[in-house]
Length: 216
Image 1 (tube, rainbow, N blue to C red):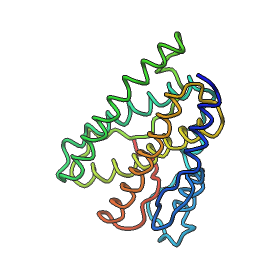
Image 2 (spheres, rainbow, N blue to C red; image 1 turned 60 degrees about the vertical axis):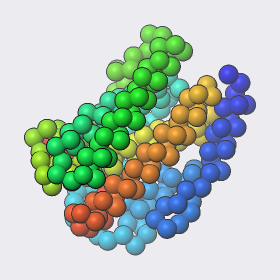
Image 3 (cartoon, helix red, strand yellow; image 1 turned 30 degrees about the vertical axis):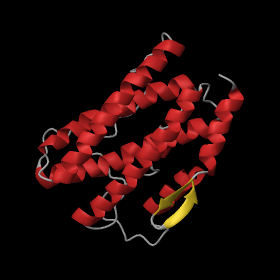
């Protein structure tokens, strides 16, 4: 696949704009925008729940090349699907629907990611990535505790996917058009989920939604 084709995809994605908390920002500003929001630089209310410092996905979501991106996104998706399945026990229909949507979408994407890794990078593992767990054990939680823990941890977790995808696009490390196009879709979908979950946290549990310390 020609590098110029991949570069055009990345350039096009960088020019795309998205609505974020009532403002429109360039897609390449997503990391700065979310950092500002989560650090209270846009008039957010003070936060009472724990917050990682520095923002965990920013620190742990570095990708070295396309193969590393595929492997790390597989690990990211595996963790998301396992957590989302726990929402089948939620008392809220909206939460159950969110869990079902994440499970369906990311389970299908896992098959695609694995096929690409096997085809283009034989011998590279989709499990040995050094990817850090970002979601606590939800199996012992129920009711409001389950919903709040899921929203809190998944905000952090999905932002890692946004950062990894944006890194791949802006660094020029995408070698295949299919992977670059996937990174655009994954970045945009997971970013939308981040803001939806932040709103849900604020609406249902009070205060501004912030990254939370993962509890054991």
